[in-house]
Image (tube, rainbow, N blue to C red):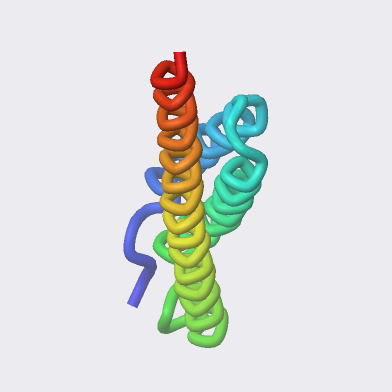
Length: 121
């Protein structure tokens, strides 16, 4: 068995994907978002930057019949990094929910305190 796709197609696409992800990470680092949200998303971006070349190699350079150990190691690493990426995305989601609830609670308290100020007048 040979590789799945030609490296002449996969590797340039991998490079384009890495450029897009690296631009995304750079933009996220300079956005005025909450520090926790920014750190989680930058971390996930770095993991994607590791996954992309492994994925490119896994489908275009490493052959299961010629290099079975390297093939298995490559795909195992890809799968494990994808799981880590999904867990970080889940942590980001839970953090967003937590922060949204806290912001809503703070907003409601401000509304109630301002309404109480108007009642006293």
